[in-house]
Each structure stands twice: as C-alpha cells, then as structure tokens.
Length: 103
Image 1 (cartoon, helix red, strand yellow):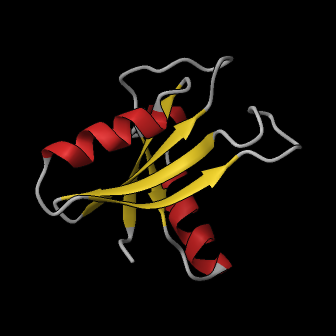
Image 2: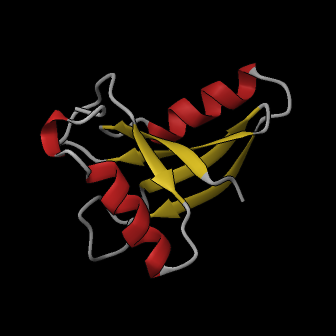
C-alpha cells in the first residue's frame, strides 16, 4: 500500500472525475468504491469515496457536498500501522502551530 495518498474533495462528482481521469492515463483503474448507506449523510447507494490509480499513483475522491463544495485544495491521507506512528507524525506536523511550514 502507498504510504501517502492524495485525497480530493468533490460536491457529488467523485465517481465522474475518477472515471474521466482513469480513461485518460495508461495503467489507470478504479480500485474501490464505498457507497453511502441508509445512515447517510449522502443519498443511499451514491458514491461516498472512490479510490483510483493513475499510472500507478493512488488517489481517493470523496463526495462531501453539498455543504462542502469542490475547490482546488487537497488533503493527504497517511496510512499508519500503529497509534504510536500516528502520534509521532501528528507531533511533528503540528510542531510550531499555525505559523509552521504548512501554514
């Protein structure tokens, strides 16, 4: 599994975007689709997240709308194996507070 995965946020176009991107780049595919259930918050059966690869690079797209709209920002998903690893990375990433290198 890839250690760091780019996470993209959409209103409700995650599946459309993943299918579009994978149709363009060689060695690309949809890996997994998670759908909303009866508990929501999305419409039951619609895509919640879709994991896809572009030329071997993994991405995750999330349908987070309508309260959160698509924009140019990204998030990074880090695959950790232990709570200690999470705690260590969190401490390093938040060192310096809001004025650190990550803003």
